[in-house]
Amino acid sequence: MRFSTQIKPISYVKANAAELLERIRKEREPIIITQNGEARAVLMDIESYEEQLETLTLLKAYTTEQPDPKTGEAYSIDEAVAELRRRRSGRSPGLEKFIK
Image 1: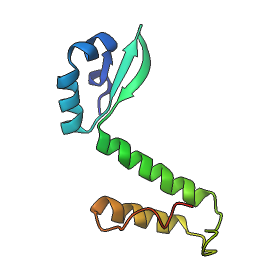
Image 2: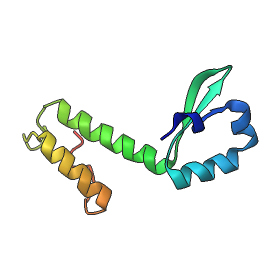
Image 3: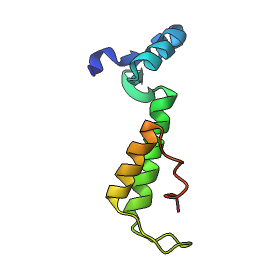
């Protein structure tokens, strides 16, 4: 990703919102929005956002190293990575097992 093509002032975003939304949907690369010359926000497609949330949820669940209060089981980082890969390939039932 070249950041020089991904940085847009808020005025450009306002004038070209539909075009930018289509671009981020196709390219799956975020747009950095500036205001008064400073980075203020990031515009990204919903799929990328959801994937990031899932990744953070799994990492948070595993880095706490606390066992599941219902089962007493603790999960390894390898299990978290495997679950994330299954989830991204569409073969996983969900994160419920991993969220404590």
